[in-house]
Length: 432
Image (cartoon, helix red, strand yellow):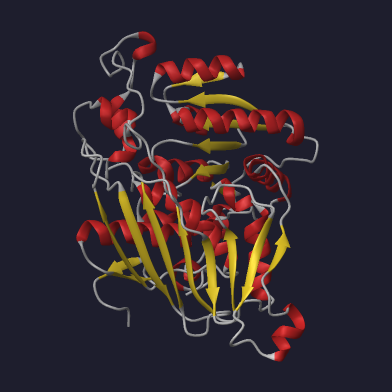
């Protein structure tokens, strides 16, 4: 089912809710606030500052985090304002856009508040934490008419858009199955980032953490440094491999398919096989999803994603069709660069018309090289001026988020789940 169907499309936007952000002219400087300046947020903020200075006339004017040390470091780097309360940034009239790079469980709430306040949003992946949040984000983008770019920068790489055209041109015939992977390995275990032992809610000065603010919509509990510094290991704040890494595979796949699609059936497997520490999320995870028929896939197709945080060998990223296969990523690293994608015709089944267009031997399609992060940020800032759709808009990202969130639920419940796109819910039986 495509992104243009179901409850997301049938929800009627309220034109009166269109937010009154500043109209940004071609020569106006864009003011950006960064919410969440840990490792990722600091990197994204500095990328915005660099792109803003060299390409897009933008600047960082404020940063926010619940950890004072992070606020101070980024405030000094950008020579801007800093705060422990993100709401101060959203309330500022001079802020045109916010970058949201907090733990996952805060993403939707902050993005919704920002859009309602007239801000455009660069929202780090994953887009959100729950299915209902996906629905809310889609509706709010439509109602407020804000620009929302989801920060899976690999979607700005050229290979996905070349693959999309190749599929649309008929190079693989009817789609059958897409596959991808995202593997890593480490001695200490994925997401076991350094803990600052002096930091906490009772600390003074630079070591202070506003723990209650950090928890936000998550269940209340006493301060736990492992949860704060290593949040991706815990279900309350993250979906582990699925939300941290599979988003970088599912999002570009939805671009390749041409029409972003919601899954109909999702199952998952895996477990904690090596890193038996405090983590709740698996260190090895697999996702299998089925999709209904549509353009380029008459009878439906499947998606298979695999990952382990204890083994670094990828599988090729490719899309199989009845008449050919497109290999987008030979070594399987979805954020890696490539000079070409490869099309391999199915010699035994292609007809003379196919051979006349494409031949019967494998061939390469050149890919334009670029720094995907710079391109992704530049695209967002450009869309703020033109009010056009960004590379990874809310509805394409929603399809990636839906299959990922469904897989997390399937894994945790030990069940195959069926996605009801009309009502944005999961159920245990096929949707009528």
